[in-house]
Amino acid sequence: MRNSSAKNRTERFVWFGAGTAIIAFLFILVASPSIFAQGGGSSSSSDRHLETFSQVFRYVQNNYVDEIDPEVLLEGALKGLFESLGDPYSAYLSPTDMRGLSDTTTGRFGGVGMYISKQQLTEEEREANKPSYVVIESPIDGTPAQRAGIRSNDLIVEIEGESTGAMTIDEVLNELRGTPGTSVEITIRRGANLTFPVTLRREFIEVPTVRKAMIGDDIGYLRITQFTPFTDDRVRDAIDSFSSEGYSAMILDLRRNPGGLLTGVVDVANLFFSGGTIVGTRGRVASENEVITANRQKVVPDDLPIVVLIDGGSASASEILAGALKDRDRAYLIGTTTFGKGSVQRVRQLGNGGFRLTMSRYYTPSGEYIDKVGVAPDKTVEEPTMSDEETKAYMELVNSGTIVEFIEETPNPTEDEILAFIEQARADGFTLNEREIRRLIRDESNRARNITTVYDLEFDTVLIEAVRLLRSGEIAGR
Image (cartoon, rainbow, N blue to C red; front, side, top):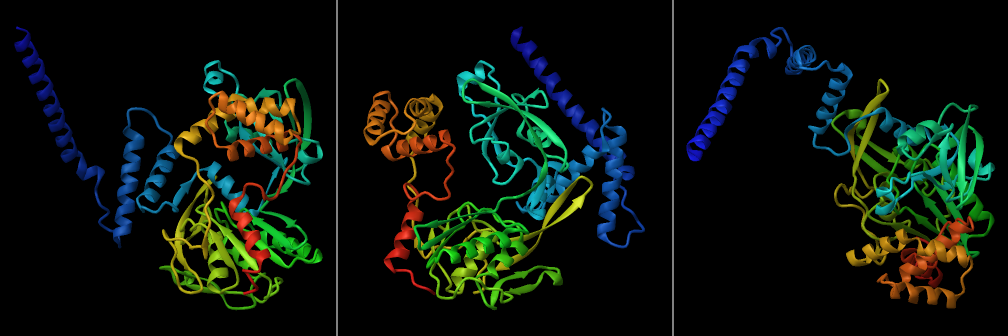
């Protein structure tokens, strides 16, 4: 009986499915002449495709089971259009995406001037529904946040009286940014118990792109984090500063630089060359075919030794600069091969959003197309990597709060105290190598004392090798 019943249920299911398929097929046959009618008077296939899209759009909007906002349909269609290109760099941009991109293209925004992130909670804290507040990574020099005395590791627990615990980082940014001259009140928590309000008056904030410092009295260290309309001015300021201090060599750090504006990197390259090719671009549209040459605004002496630091995070515009310096024998590159993004995108506004579209590919002065290949260093130098087991131990040690407690109790630990801590950590089961534990201790000590450093000659293997190469005389002016 049970088998017969099961068979009947199966037959009913199969026929129901088949019946549905037939009905759907018939509906398509009946409906298709009116839904998908091609515009007979169109002069091109593009016109016919647009007419088809228009008809489908209207049909879905008028007949879908639930009422739907036409903007939602359009946004979905635009996303699909760019995804169909199979190009990861061409994309529809939401208003949030456009805002972030605008920071790079304009080089400034209305805000209070600080780097922020959301607090990382342990699994136990999440299960206990502990709020995830906003961590101030660091205030930007010369901004309202810095002048108000805000420090690295402070927490923003409220904005205009509303807790940040449940806010996304985008929601926080929307609250902090705004028209220059307007004010925003935030509540800061410092340490375990100190909580106080701060009112910040928004200003135009220039997107920081350059960090600089002298290494000793001979090497100018210059880190470029991205390329905006102001980057060349900041690079020029750095070079002027190095020159006034009598530098005899330079380290240009392009690691983890994702790129930015083509005009921005060309303006920076002009500071290193007197004429000659910087980069070439080629596209389907004639206006995209160009050979960009230096305009003789060089400020770096021809005989100054330069080492460029690169890695897999160096992409796009940073690869243009690294490739030009290498191809023209102007600098010595060390690190690891760059990301390999050899295309140029144009950005267009579309309502509050927009899109970016790949319009051309770029080539280094030697004619190399580096997409998916990257720029190779003259000398490969890799940072030590952690195994999966070490990474797990690293996160367990960070999340345990042990190092924070150690620094709170011992703000300036001696070598003996550090060794004792490492021994105890291992006894507690944290199987992490000594180098990484020492780095965590050093970083936490700096954070606790509100110390920011431009470079790291203690743990940065690639930088250490760059300094050695320059001071040994192995790298001469090119």
